[in-house]
Length: 569
Image (cartoon, rainbow, N blue to C red; front, side):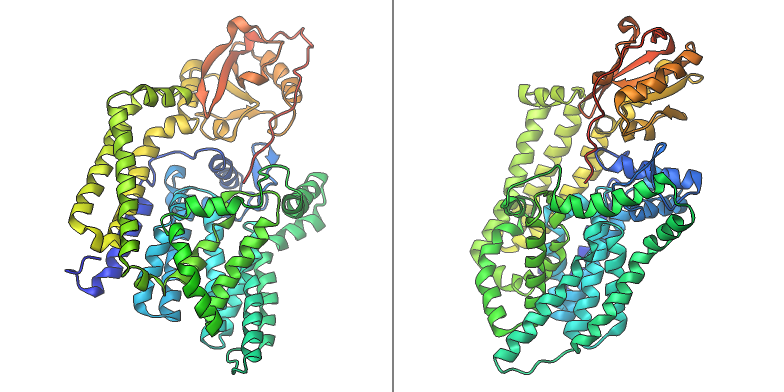
């Protein structure tokens, strides 16, 4: 922070910047693929049907993820009353909770001064900001994970604290039924036991709670998982339908154990997460080599806090590296622990000129990159036009993007002239604040009609008129979510041929008022191509619209091929 400001203002002003940056754009866009529409669709079905136990995707059960995140979205809608304003709230609130927990832990483990450093380090990590502005499960998982770490660290590092321990176990349990890896905070027990053994071998006294107290984690964890598993078990015992049993088996076995041990997509090499850390964890990632020696000295001294934080982060990294299926969001829960681990080192690092120059250069690089892109878009460069054409987006977006990017670049340049290298850390904080405001207020809202299916579905509604009936074949969640009327669908995971088997007779019952929206590559040979309407492109998928009169009821040719694989996170 600028030295002209009293120190007591630093933390409140940082919080103001964080809230403004992460909340920017709330209510200004629709859910965007791949993950957001399916979660909002399931949450909307819960609100409309009153059936909250099992999430649905259209007429089918959605068995890829537990329903807790969808519960939160549905609950947010009940409070706010608008899906557009509410669907991002769980991620935003989970991000703010994670930031507060990290700030509070840094104050408790080190000092109030270090609270500012931990908070800034977490906020200024690219991956954290990106996920805080997306309606995906992962940020809520981070909130649950960080809450569990908060309880564990208070019990293990401060003093015996059974309420905090119970909260840790319960949060880990709820995190597990939010996304299967929510149990990972409990692995902190292992580096704590390793620290105790290390201290005893060096002949040092071992303070802290008795190991037997950690057994309280078991009932607390089970209580957390019972939030959803208990009503699911009750339903399985009292209504053991085949669909419910299939749902439970798919979710509890295939989407957990099988997905981890033998992933069927997102297969990556063993070094994949090193690449993720080096890019998505900027700007702090390039400072990690400078922290190795200080961390090693603290570990050798037996610093319990670093043993627990770094040991747990290493175990999480090892856990995800061991699985053949890898995604960049899997290591997101490590970030709060890493921000805590770097907090005591940052004051010393920021006194080094080379570190300040690096942070200053990072901000200048962002300024130059966005400024160059802004100029290219404002001058209608062939490269910028080609990028939009490749994504089937209109040239009218170029001045919107160009103005936004150039304004951001000028603002960062002005801040750099004012703050200079001496206040490079403040420059990075303000740069990231402006970056997420640009992202939320300008870029994503402008992209929204084309990144979501809202533009295509609006054209569909205008083309068929308000009194027509609409059905979908080979659809995506955003098509059903953003339709302007009740829609008939014939299953999501069913093979396309089976969907057509039901869609054809449906069209034939009222051909003059019924229409069908279908993915181009799933079109049936029993449709008159002369009546097919090319309605648009969304998310690199081409959609076609056909009236009921285009269907030939005498045709019995089958549409070959299955549906696309569902690619859930």
